[in-house]
Image (cartoon, rainbow, N blue to C red; front, side):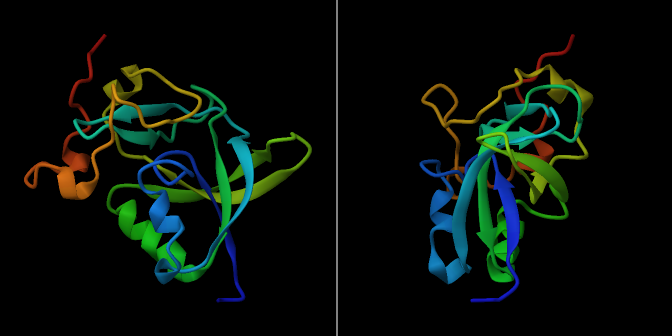
Length: 162
């Protein structure tokens, strides 16, 4: 295990009980340890988009909700694995954000994956405070997706305009 640990805030499919949690829980990917439940100090829009029902935290601070998620301590190897999942830096960006611990008495600085380049109409999707995979909007893992339609090219799928 690396002696240098980072904190990451996960708000979507990487949370416990969600479709990609197994990646955080697999020692072959590196080290991870649950720290706490938290929520973003700033409001952000969290939407579920594309035909694959991917949760996106959009980098538009000040609108949306204080998004609920989980904080993990991870090593560099796990961070690199998460970068692959999130297609960083091609699709998602990541930055350090303040995350309020569940009891509200402490803030931690955590890495957060954010969608920076997006069509404005993606903001027309419902903003949610907490992601949970559901039967109505079931997340599709990469192995289940249409091979010629990438998520980053599908951001306007199902989005209605004003």
